[in-house]
Length: 288
Image (cartoon, rainbow, N blue to C red; front, side):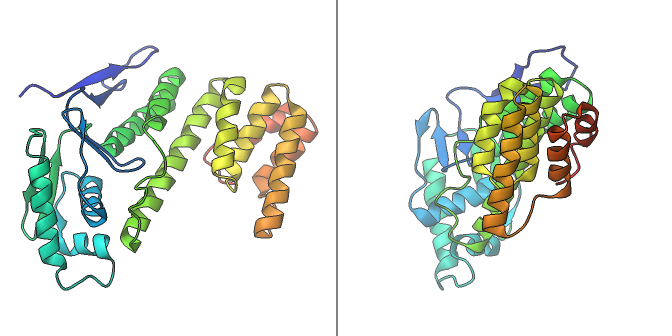
């Protein structure tokens, strides 16, 4: 069968099998979770129905191409105290969803034992595309292909449209799923900034780091990256001010002081010690 997807090359010297990512062709079904739930069938936006139906569909998308039991669907949709009609409601929602996607030849909602499976092709779910780009970016970074790594990771970041599963986190299960996605997003950002700094993109990355620090104010790793980018851009005063802001925030809101790594970086920048700064930022896997 002819693939419904194409591959997108990145700039830089290509390596066979490591510089291409599956992306959806226009007009085919797209299932987007990295923000408010979006479903596009043949280019037309489709609503899966009310809140419960949306949660059910999002949960199946999160576990695309895997069996999901009805009991897990019920817990994700209603929580620990579902109505007695929950199982029948699930069957009703699935029946309606099947009718809505029946024109989508590339997506199927099938019964599998005591549950269901949303079958989708590679790249149709934005989360799957993002995870693949993350893997390609990490592989490129580990192989020293920094331009490729930056391209893959930037493309992955651009798939995010806001808070994941926005408006669908009324149960503990969906809250946990959203938290898992947020942690993935944070790790993606950190790897992207690591690639940018390793490729000497210090000035260019500052606006993005400022936005990330605003979004994740307690993440010392991001503060350290911002301090490093500012210092290497000749803005030593701004790098030191970034540390003071972090110190004040952590003390006022959490009653703690910055970790040893951030404090050591502050001291190195204060002394304008390039060798010590380099040593402190050599291993980007060290946590604050």
